Image (cartoon, rainbow, N blue to C red; front, side, top):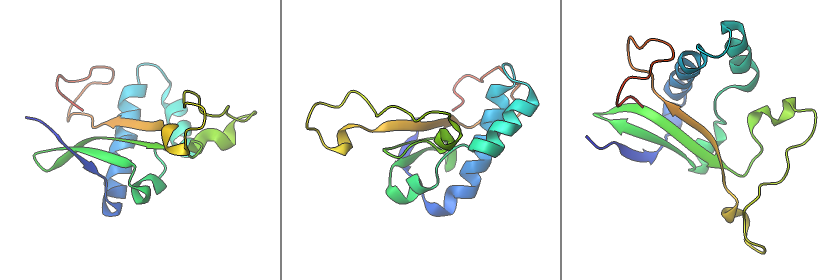
Length: 126
């Protein structure tokens, strides 16, 4: 079955954030202590909700269920305020190109499968 890719809606923000937090906890578990993952979620979050209003945040939907999400923006990421030095400007745009040529992916979140063990992505999940 091919997923439907469509713009996210503002009324989907809370379910999206919940899915992304589950995803971060599951995918981070093999690599980070639980306290580190929880601190990252508390300090940085998972996505900038303004991307939904901008129309630059997308969801993947299968059988009416959101199974993933991704977005892009020209804004600095949420965690930029935590950095000791500023992020360099986005690279790769041709000289003279407008800001639309310098988009940057900010989040890519798969929905964890029910009962999935940390560190073991189910085939076809996300």
